Length: 105
Image 1: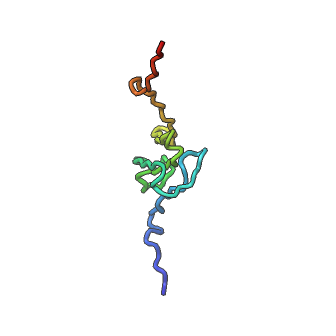
Image 2 (image 1 turned 60 degrees about the vertical axis):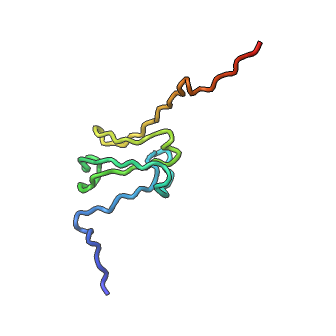
Image 3 (image 1 turned 180 degrees about the vertical axis):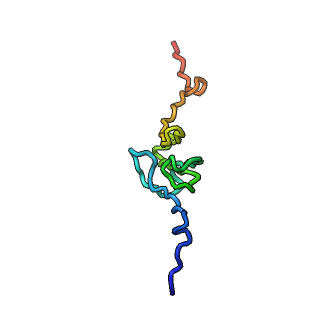
């Protein structure tokens, strides 16, 4: 029995992108499941400028659980690059800070 050829081969269809590791180049933790970390999906309007096949309409990036706690991922549309943005540390509001006990004389 002859094998049935993949209908996508030779018809300009690219293989779906796979997420293999954290988008943080300094980390590269392996991707295991969507239940950990944060997945970000971005619309791509000109895929060739991003170095992607012409039929690609979105780019998915994943940050592992450790990296997504202190950074987020963005696309720079002017430079066509992925950017890691440090998260701002939010100061604790004064009313949420614990009160110190008053000294008794």
